[in-house]
Length: 230
Image (cartoon, rainbow, N blue to C red; front, side, top):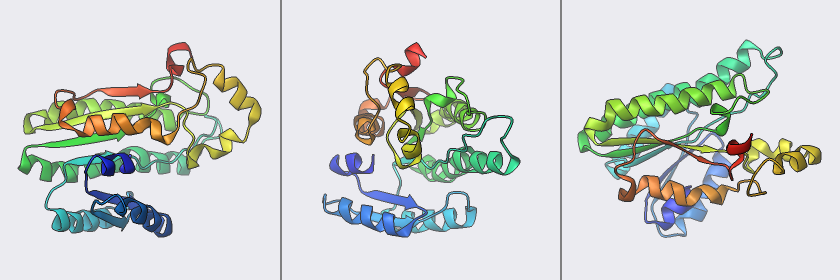
């Protein structure tokens, strides 16, 4: 998503918990000719979030697009799910989204314009095994997207969601090690392939651009049609 926005001409603020990977990504994106501000941030630490946001606003003056993409899995069976895992997923995948959006929206209200994109999941739309916490949190995120769109629309702030299906990412690496699961899951996807990170690029740019200015409150599914048949 960051690479696609850089190619479209956007300057970038990048957040991650791991400094090494963050620096490497920032270096690659700077070669595209845009300004890039990498910041080591854990979105569950409010003080760190506020400090980083203040620094970013001093550097760029404004934030036009916020993408909430931080997330952890916590995919235990409901009978085995412990409170610590539940709280960690809720804090990372939902609570941090609301409070960061709230902070950024205050600056967007002043400029009377902004785009907030929440990365949800088809796990929040379909009832899947081992999804008690992740699916519940992502369903909450879909509805939070609607509520914020209603409340903040009068200020010129659009809020939308992207709900990916099964994508090849660092978080799903262990799933793809199971060849039987891969074969079975592929058979449930009409396009007969899994999503790749590049598959969200065009949608991200569209939702960030003025071309989507009359879209708000919607969560767009991008899953190769899997949710149509599962």
